[in-house]
Length: 249
Length: 95
Image 1: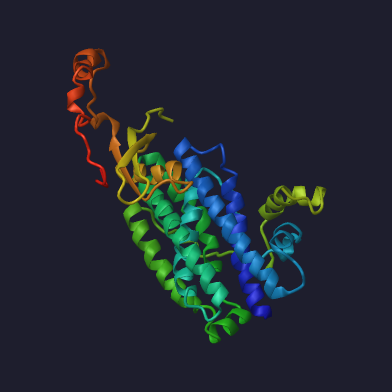
Image 2: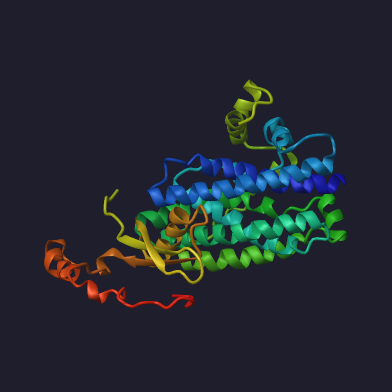
């Protein structure tokens, strides 16, 4: 089914691109412990991407496996959110990006566990355990930095000011998704938004940061219209497969 | 940027139900919650454990290595403290 392929591809691309972004921290974390924590999360996300893109390939039934989907598409064919391709910035930006994403992923996977599509339900159930930890980790950091020193507060607030404009896209539902909602395969996005908003409000209150009042919201990633950052990510992500076609290790 | 270090914590992991927590190493963390999470990330990423304890290192009181002679040597000459002088009859299991 085309709609389901599109949907699974979106989920897979979110995990793939955010996993790659986080992996850029490898060896650069603020402390050894956090360096390992971030790369653990990156590996969880790359693992999710592998499962999701494998399933997407099966749904498409054109002989593309996870590697073909991850490494051999052009930028306009990626369906990830603009949020996940944003640069790492400082540690505050990375944690804020992670928190905004985790808080969306958790209620999504919770509901996808009950999907009428058995494979998607199984993937959601497995990924949910990982996502719970990711959210705990990122929300504690947002609180710790927001409610920390003057400098950490200022930096996490700036991170939110930068990233907030990408959050509207998390909750845009296109026609193919509405089709899946009607079939009981995918939850209605309004439910996810409500759960996300209450979690975000609670954490921001504790972190003493405030949602910026700028109303301009960016979107386009879900339709393949990306920011300039994705091209650089793909250049690095795809290099080996492009330079040495079909190479494996 | 300040170069102040976070406190040091000692990490204890229970590898499976029924076994005791064993000391596996140490790490730095700002508070206990972060210490447990860091321990999870640093010390259990290859399924090493099912339970974690962390103790701030400053709360551990240790014996003085210089006193090792007086503390531990006297026990060396008291082999009778080991229950090795009993004859166990044949057919007794679970000993």
